[in-house]
Image 1 (cartoon, one colour):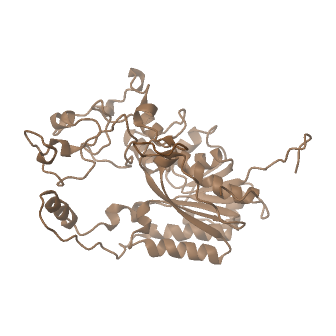
Image 2: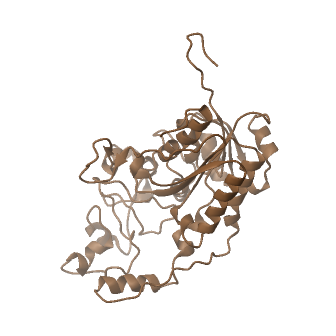
Image 3: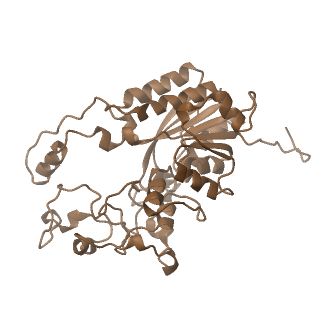
Length: 384
């Protein structure tokens, strides 16, 4: 189709977002040029967030369990006919695949790391390869079943890197095999958000699918190399760049104040360090802790000169990353580190806001992946 000037008109592809959460994937697909028609999410607080950001998150919001839906009903709710093109996107709950769900037997891994830190010989414990029972694992298959039932033209699936761990990899490979047996050409991408302009070292796995041509792996736009040797890429975006301005009093949140058992030690940790700064390993004159005896994000502080570490959805009271100004991160700061639009609003109390932001996929990272899927539908084959 062409307009009066002879320019080709490319229609926006309708998008249905399953497991929408707070809207990270939905925003990213829109930024890639998609037309978000429907967002499905079970969590009522997340649904409130989606509805509160109507201008940035258009389309219907359906509060429902994905496993109870069918393809025909989804098309109807999204205002689509059986013949309309559509792309399904989503990130099923990652908890069944997180490190906490597959790590080695309790205590064994920490013993190994402690022995190594002390210069002792130790045998690395064997990882557990048998998956723990968790009904949420089935939601991966529910996602693909809806893609097939709705006869989607393409899809974007997102999850944590540990979905490729030995205990979970079979599920991921079966997902790809089933998708390809139903006519989809697929590409798996393991990406670090910092390589695509997100100020956060957040790794994610994407499976991209299309009925028309194989989606390409998007070329990274940024480099994490301190030498910045690649002249064709920008330096990774730092926390100092994106958090500038949020230190003003108007952004203050009562929950940001740090106090309690480790307050004194916390204030002594320099930017970019964790509890290990207060160990003999780091040369501290009066060690408080022993190296490799705590989780790596205990008392962890951001460095203004580097990207952030992964933002957690349910951090403990002393789990970072914290701001280098000796406080917890504020809601707009967490949002900025995830590359959400500046005016995006999150509902709920502080814990609920952190959960929503920490569980979200960075919109900017999703955009780069979604562009490759949409390119196959628009006929240009994506990035070569």
